[in-house]
Image 1 (cartoon, one colour):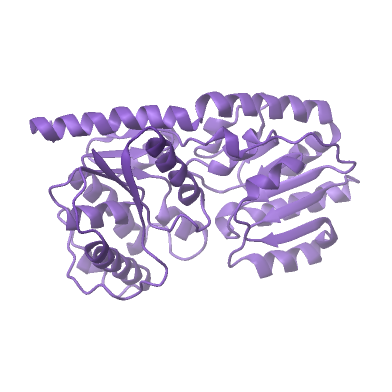
Image 2: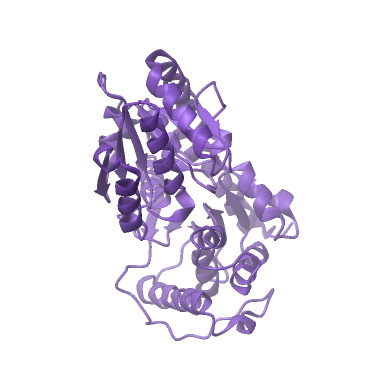
Length: 383
């Protein structure tokens, strides 16, 4: 069986999905499966001219809105690039983005396509101030879930929380399957160390949705209380200049290191003590599992997939979204009590190893792929 793993971003691009799927691909290839990776290169822009339509809604009522025009042009570009590059059909296509799944189904209507939805583009745009909640852009983007349900053989997502979110936009939410992300434990190597000053670390794109403004204010409060720390901030994005200015204004710029984008942050994370990321939304939050495998104590917000990974007080600490004082209390508590943070880190690592292993994902996907293949052979799609 020939399978295509279809990504939106190239594997070398930053982001949990782009870094995870190649390891799934490698794992299947090691087991003897015939599997390829495919994505849209950054250089392909405004090439596609093919008319695109949807079966479940009329997208043209949203024409003229910049976000939607850009999205649709990317859709056309993906279709164009797919036609250019893929000449032989696959038995199954596993897409990791709604646009990718719909583009693949457009080019290969007879090929079974399954889709894993890893995050919500519309929620990210709203939280980052790009579009308004309830506006036409959100209506367009959430309509794609219904289109995906109508065309894909199977829709999957990465957390029960995100399944509940998607359920509002599909006809049969019970058919959405949840397979949490998985990680190759060999990539994450805890390193024995003793830091005289607690080392905090976060890894993310620097955008408002990640709540880094809350993190900086919480760190300023910890410092005001007399706490000592160093915050390692790995990632880049449009908020970097604003965050650096905020750090200076709060008097903590000297306590923070802004690294910018790092290709393999897992090689650096084991030398820290506490991973903290106060996201305002997160479908799964790959980086929490990665930090847990590096034996870091976790602090996250009580949202989405984060609250499914962290059991407050057992394998990490959860705080409410946008609560500066609660976050400061959590940071202060872990900085002041090395034994407690190590106990949390050890419990987090054990959970990540048992529930978010790459082997577990490969076993679950194997069952999915074989089921879809059997349905194709017997003509049972749609039953």
